[in-house]
Image (cartoon, rainbow, N blue to C red; front, side, top):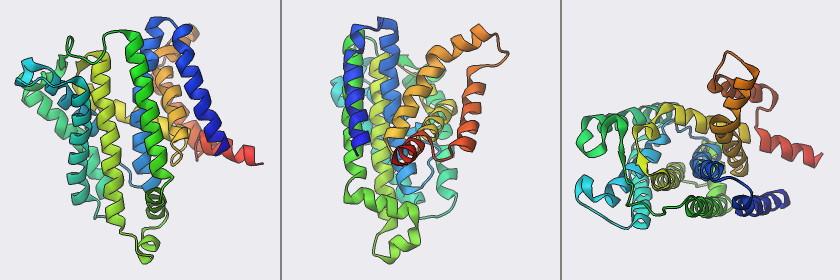
Length: 313
């Protein structure tokens, strides 16, 4: 707990001071990193704490993004609500869809849930292409002029505050009796049921909460960058989420947070420059997935678990 508290304090202090020393272009990227981190830790809330592997988490990122964008851009469906309201509605809509899907699929055991969720992003992505007049097709559409903030600094602090609030909420959840029941389901569903835990209920609850935070993050991303597009449903984003969480350490919240920050900045900032400087005939994704394989071999439980074990000894 002391390590976690110290890490949280350092994160807040460093993040709050960054605008004083970081150029605006890099500040913009770091703000996006914070929103990506919410997606990763919300995935860990489901997978790391209940053991139910959701391969379609980007479905809820995209749902939150598109719903918020449509609600706050009057030229699309003739509705214009305040961006803050649109972000909340985006999260609630993602949670509602998560509830419906969870009730149907989480009664099944084995790989059925993972198979269903793996298909979901492809299904929802097709709606973007079919109803292109509404959703903008392959290119998406812009919400410029209707977004929550209009300066890089304000967007950066918005992303930071949203990350801290989401992080605190999810830490509160996993540290409560609900979190203990999540972990009981993860460790042994049969044993959890034998002591009176309704495993389906808690799996659905975890899925709904995870979907809600993913939807909030997706809606915030749209307000941050002013555009929404089908790449928010895409498989590469899902792979990046999995890589970040596994690298950091599943079932820890803090571990996936660290992994998200490192991986997102590596992919979008310094890794390409390093590859170019070294004149390597590979791209950044090959390096990232090689890192995943190396971590799986050398630190199968992830960075945060490894750090905790070393500090204990």
